[in-house]
Structure formats: structure tokens, C-alpha cells
Length: 87
Image (cartoon, rainbow, N blue to C red):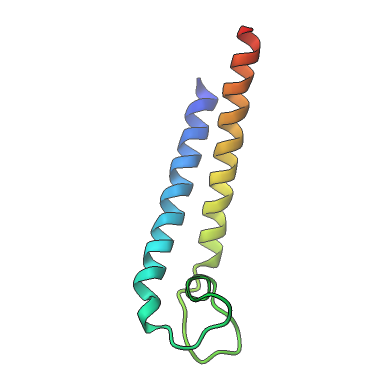
């Protein structure tokens, strides 16, 4: 039960962080005129050598993705483990 709560919190917090950054980036897209790659990834991660500015939220976005992956792993491990023990 405790691990299920921990996994749920990780998954929820990671999802909120990633979605908030994606929403911020989409609101920022109209002001991006020079970019490399796709516009949304440039708005989030940025790139060196461009005079255009970006949000530079790559590290928090990556941490949010890590939280999502960790939460998913903990939940799957806990739920599958409980299912296998019962059977």
C-alpha cells in the first residue's frame, strides 16, 4: 500500500510538471522565430548559437519525465507483485 502511494505521487507530480512545461512552451511558440529542430522542443530545451531566446526548461522537463517513469515502474512492480502473490 505504501509503495502504491509513493508510485502514484511520483507519477502525478511528474505528469503535472511535464504538462505545465508543455503548456508554457505552446504559449511561448508565437514569439519563436528562429529555431532548430521542432519549434516546441526548441522552446523547451533551447540551443546554443542562436540569438533567439527560449524557456530553457530542459532540466525540469527531464526531471518530470524521470518522475513519470519511476512512478510507473513502482506502480507496475507493486500491482503485478500483489497479483502474482495472490495467485
